Image (cartoon, rainbow, N blue to C red; front, side):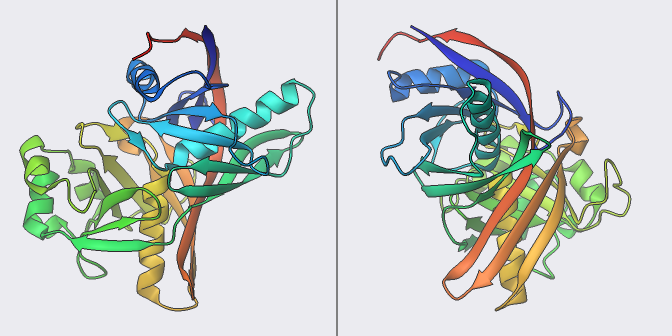
Length: 305
């Protein structure tokens, strides 16, 4: 049985920029092993699979896979899947609502659709969990993992720390844009440091953005390196977690909004709009951005496991 898929570039307004995502539509009938094989075939940072919602009050169940594992939540798959589903509704003549609710392993992900004229071209998601702050990582070990000097790691605001709002990352602030540009994952350094409290990837960022005008000013420039030694052009879940961490450091009552650039150094410039709010029940965060559909087609299901 063939399955339809749509590929969208996420956190960009420009085709072939941002972070590519494959969305497999009407994925019921595929088992977990088949989904994993399809994700490995696309070999994007993530592939999403759309299934009927378990609760009819929700829009869909969405399962998200990297090339090597299923993850409970991720940012760019939610934004991209929302834009693709809105496009599907419009093409079939059905009304497009203002918001979706996706069922995911980490919890419910609430998504507000963004329109330009009559077309949905972006979305803003609320992370399914409040900020969780976990283990601290030694500066020397982090520097080795990123092929940097210990002095390149900025610790005045926070030490390198494992954080999550639904998916776990080691978040590291760097002292300069130059250091961020030099960073690259070191396999031996990663193996010695990760996984740490379930973090398998490092999200490195800097507030030194004066030289990065790109397609507009940013408050943060970031890069994200996975345990597969690959770089992610735009990481919504890590951006939301890092924004939540920075809001938490400012204390009760803080509302923080950040413009985050990512993917610049790998030639896939992305722009993410992150927000976080420190509330009595925790620090809640989200991220917004645009998405552009670039291709679509059908795929054959792998043999059942």
